[in-house]
Image (cartoon, rainbow, N blue to C red; front, side):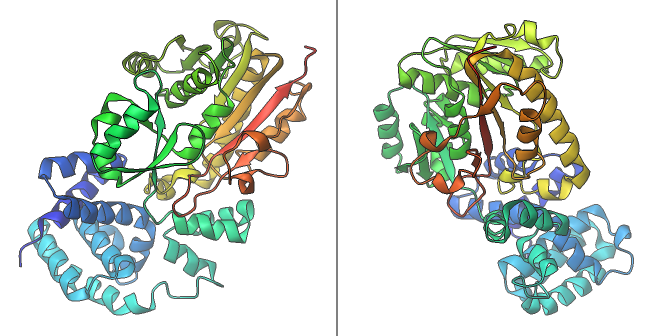
Length: 456
């Protein structure tokens, strides 16, 4: 039996991710397009690639139990065996189909390893029925295997979210994320853009903040001219809510100190336009090439009144460049973070992150918040946000700021009245927004609105 085309495509993507140390999403999309796969094979390949990347460490544990010299396994062979182990342990594909197919692939890639692969995969297949080798309800090691997370990350979720929400987040991380889009009012009316989705057979559900839709099936929506043109922009519902919180008042001013590709910049201006009129936004990034991409993207999307600036927002000198102290009505600090709220969109992230990085990322967020807060005028506010769920990067940063000399004169402005209907469960006792991944729901995002007193 020859190696099937969908599995061959999936293995090629896995090898490409490993050899280039790249993220899987873009490589997967390019490979599917090049192979000309139909919808069924596309779904199969996507599941194999994302599932294998998400479970990488767990799969290696399962394989290495039966390898005399794990470090001597050829990288291409390990790619093939990982994917086979994923099918055996997580997808529960019948062993005869998986093992034969994988051994054939190993024989083509590295013939001398075929016998070893056959023996090891048969042992994994024998153990598949008892996987995750413990009770996830009582054994965190078993829970880590079942949910395909490093043990340290399971402990972190339990500590920071509590047991019930931790289990929800771990469970959701193994499922495809729902696809949300945000309306761009600068190109099309809401009604016209939705009508074009309907003509393509895409179902839409109004959910989250104003202008937010959940689309299904995702594939046709993402490939549509509605998204390609920019009438709707792909953005998680919680991320859209953060942008809405930071939107300038009509005719007012706002600063986005770490704009990146500018998705939140676009949505901030869109929210201002819906509220009565665009404001003036300054969007900045540390890297010149990113600012050029940002500028081009804003132009193509028709977004008005945005100045794009290259600046290091962690330095005091950036304050004058971004408008001066007390110059802005709103400031958004969308801080670099561990991205642990978006693991289902970036499955390989959970195995690449080191626990020590969380502290360094939190320290970076603290510096950015201390600098950016000085841009806010009296009566204005700064929104500090991340796409993670760790207390160290979220609540600890905000609490340290409020207790500092710089944070004197700031107080929490509760978000209760600003979050979408049905989201009150995600408002903390402090009045901050903290979502966590749930099946069919938004990603994990944090936002604290910090109001500056009227007297500077």
